[in-house]
Amino acid sequence: MPAILTPPRHRNRFAPESDLVLGMNEPDSSTADPSIFTRIISGELPGHFVYRDDRVVAMLTIAPIRPGHVMVVPIDQIDHWTDVPADLWAHMSEVSRIVG
Image 1 (tube, one colour):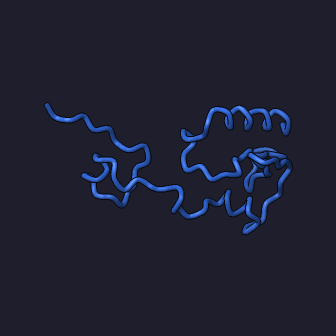
Image 2: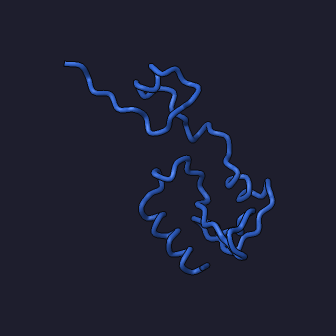
């Protein structure tokens, strides 16, 4: 009976298809380039913060839908939204409630 292989969660568009099926060449967050949010949080790029604690920041967006449109972002870089721990989601939700 053939083994059942599951595809990786993060698709690497530069990996050969056979490597994708085997789950190889997945991005590694320890070697990934910093995201735009990480660069803003570190001060490398400008940002207007309206809230900050040890876990998240809330900042005005660059292209607001409405005046005062704010994003709540984790300080630690997380490559995919499905990787956010439940307790951090709860904290982000609470900060959104406070800021909003």
